[in-house]
Length: 344
View 1: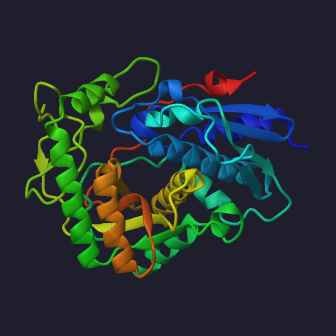
View 2: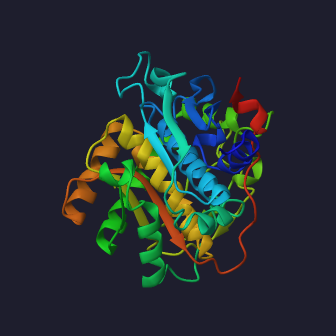
């Protein structure tokens, strides 16, 4: 029997997972030796997440982190049941995951199997963060690619059975994805409602939201369309300046063959596992998700990926991987204390 103290320690690790605008929309209930994970849609952004996919992906990421942390701390593989109450949304608007507000989306418990690479991935949790800096010292080696792709999807369990994949984008697909991302990003620049939402999430109180220092530099060659958190209703702040980015970038796609609620949760699950594997190798990880936020641009991404990869691919996240040419800023954004997200 694994006592509550060990479960709470694993939750301390798990909440280091990324979430949309650092909203941390997860809630936990400890029931015996199980942890029930639910979504709190009262804290999620809406305009950046009209379908609720980023809210569900945030839950998937924290579940992956909890599995890894429990396995590393107990020496036994974790087991997860996703959507124990079914995959029909209880109802309500989709934006920000409101349709799933309060629903239990996963139950995580300690099993009897071997923990696999949990210790290595768990050790990367405190170092993992999303970089908006250039990664110009080279993309992953073939050996590094193999480790990251293999680590993103466990060999057994719901993720493997559901067809979750982590896949390397070849050069032509990479160029197409960069172009689609740039197009989606350009449309956001002229959207005052979107910019107002971004501004509202910068430097919020209570250890949530986007830190002001998260604004990364612009690409001086105008190739790389990184999300610009220096934008505001008054225009680009420009504090981060410009730097030359790697081009073309090395891109990893997290995909499934369908796009239901479970697929969207698993998109975040595979994303975090890939990020932790990359971090353990000293790779930087960035995100290019802008083109996945609206149906039309997402459909274009899926069509391009499906044609290149040779199978139906719904893209849940696009990660940029590479070696930095100078040390990346350490650490991660602030998190709520676990005591605030554990329900009693």
